[in-house]
Amino acid sequence: MERYISLSRAARLVGTTRTELQQRIQNGELQTFEGQLEMSELLRAYPDAQVEDNTMIERVERIMAEAVHKLPDDDTLPDARALHLRLGHLGQELAEAKASLCRYSWIIDEMSRLLDEAVEQGDTDLRALRDRFHRLLDDPSACPDFPKAAIARDRVLSVLEAHVRLLPSGHDYFVQGNESLLEAALKAGLAVDYGCSNGACGKCRARVVSGQVRQLRPHDHVFSEAEKLDGMILTCSYTPLTDVVLETAEAHGSADIPLQHIDARVRRFAMIDEHIGRLQLRTPRSRRLRFLAGQYAILKGSDRQGAAYSIASCPCDDMNLEFHVDMRLDTPLTRQLRDKPPATLHLEAPRGDFVLHDESEHSIIFVAWEAGFAPVKSLVEHAMQLEKAEDIHLFWAAPEGGHYLDNQCRAWDDALDNLYYHRLMAEAPSELDLRAFEVVETGLADHDLYVSGPEDFCERVTAHFTARGLPTAQVRCEPLRQGTTED
Ligand code: FES
Image (cartoon, rainbow, N blue to C red; front, top):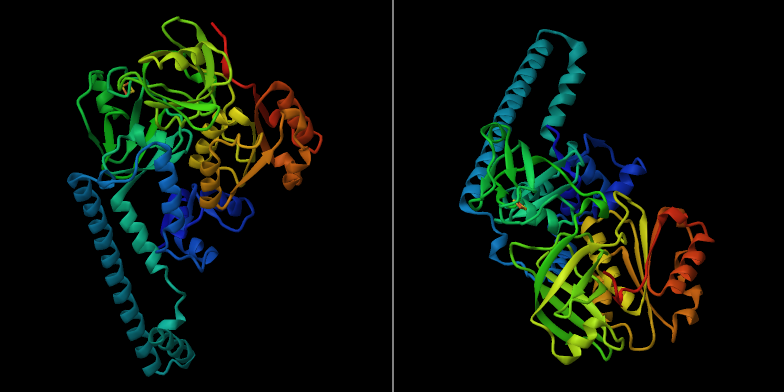
């Protein structure tokens, strides 16, 4: 019997990315059925796949885990009830497979007996068929190779992590251990609707279309009896016991995320290099910041003066926010940080629409000038999670010594086959030699461009790429948000 698996699971099995699989589907090299891939076809397309080789996956997962300040630990194991249920399903599947095997075995014996009988009774027409049939039965190599290892690994993964598919978008992700459905969706880079993350606001409502879920914690939000019967749950308070399909709302752009006002604790402020300080804020557990990668915040200290800074961290860690502050500039925030970092800062966020194009599967070019790297860092992390872009080119231009997170960019380049880091140097934005961009000169119509830096820098870079065929509609520019005063 044929086995179908989701694109995400197929990518994990053969150690590739969803992007590459999507590319091969578009090229007609792989066929899908209702968005799923046939296991044997996958193995035909990847005959050399080392299904036991997890190196690439582990390296990427480690980078993503470090991005959210959390390393994998025992929490990645499902609880006993989930294991019990998933093993129960596996047992059921095994029982059905064994029953089918017995039935086919019986049919083969019967066919063999009927053919022998017919030949013995003088039916010479069937002799050649009978002999061929017996040869096939006796020769195990006559049968095409069956992807046993891949199926075994797929079954083990299905016990360790649950697969979630969202409707109507079709987005999917995996939930490990006792993570809530919401936490895992954010870690996968999905912009699902939510608010408080603690069961009070009801904004993360979803309907369970199929599969089983378990409540992780009590919640204050009350569902009517009709809603309960309809399968409504809160994604922040439930975890899946089996693979599930959920109907839920997702943001499609910055306009779908409300402006929030939050008092956040200053967790740490430290210089990363001579000029740039890393400011880390922590929101209260029940007032996390919902935002899209690439957006910015207005930070206000005790003087209530607002200063705009891009958020440099990933929306998947909505309690721990990072900002890169250029301490050479005189802004309301740098003045406070120089005197003595305040205990709390008031956040008004998110703002701006320097976010990834919704649903775009184009390759991506990121270009940043010096501290314009902050929103780009957030976007790169988001693009890595989504695994939609075929190639990601990251150009970071700065004066000598200005690439303050150079090691991080090199680590991305090392870990991901499709991410290319280009470190560019110039004394000033106007002095950057644009010939450095010539490494991506072909197929620019299939690229999205994100530029972050001073206005004239954005204009120069945009003009360079649009003159070579990159459509203007696929360009997003972000001015340097380094304490610009806004109300
Ligand atoms: S996010 Fe508020 S109830 Fe789930």
